[in-house]
Length: 317
Image 1: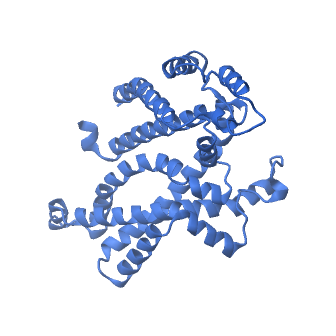
Image 2: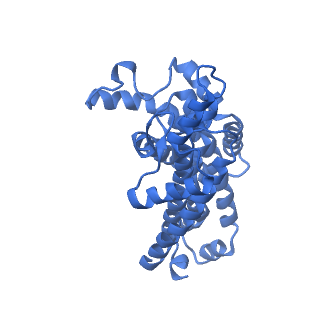
Image 3: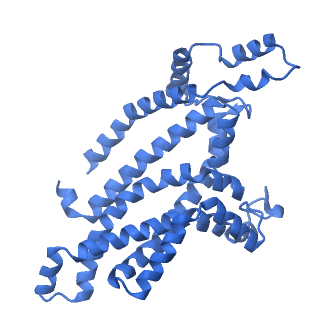
């Protein structure tokens, strides 16, 4: 297992280099650059625009700028400079990284705590009233856009979004601050987790039904194993595909809830990414895309490790 983890970590290095190349040139395909917004400003002359481009290094060829960017990342850990915020990109991302990961992990826990038991119940009572009710609610959860559900909950709870009340924004750490956070954080967790929860529940139900029809289940029952222990083996086998899906949940939450984060006024990376795209803030965009790719690889690695822990057959292979 240790050698497998080391190999996967080593593979990530050339993979991230390839991803950085793709991210850079995908960003280059975006029409214009950061200075383009000044072209329509009559108070800024074309000479001043060229001077700004030279100062920001936007006058150099794409390959030269890519080489300079990669060199700074490898030698200094410098991911570039945000033109719009006039600050290093790594500082901007670091400020919001904690909230982004915290909300994402809390959302995944919320999804699993509800989706897995509901999926098990639905599979053990197929085509009964409870199964139909859970399926109906799941389809509603899948069909409602996150941002629309956020607006509904904000209206019903008379909330203006955010993670803190106005009096606690920027306040020092205290017990009251923690209480206020828990009073607000349930809203983004419920909104972001709704659609994924419904999908996970349906996957768990399908896995359970497939496993219940497997020959090994009939063999366990034929040997006189109590039904409670049979269900334990069924649930353990049905969880394998769920763990594989969990490896992709973290980047999906990061990249798929940008509009929801804007609506809820969350201090996460989503609104930053949208603002960077609108402002042609290319180094912030590229770093965010690389961060998503890195989280995807880490999520897949963690999922593979959990699968090996859960299933001895995978460990043997």
